[in-house]
Image 1 (tube, rainbow, N blue to C red):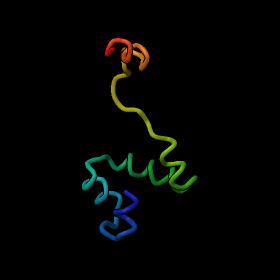
Image 2 (cartoon, one colour; image 1 turned 30 degrees about the vertical axis):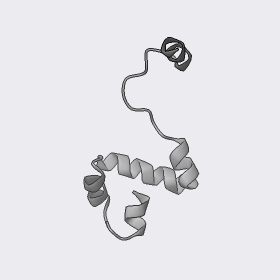
Image 3 (cartoon, rainbow, N blue to C red; image 1 turned 180 degrees about the horizontal axis):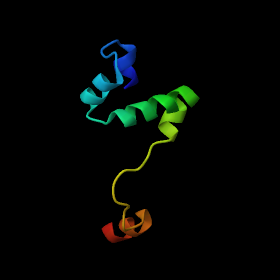
Length: 65
């Protein structure tokens, strides 16, 4: 997203959302996070999407052995 804006490949949030296949609300949220604390804040606040794992990492590693 930042690359698209900085390289002038897009001018609007709508264009960015279309290229990335994400909703405009996501782009606005990411931009707000970036404005608040830079790239560190943007990366720190990543949300996990999808169903939570049923097995812990420890349990999964024991099963694989």
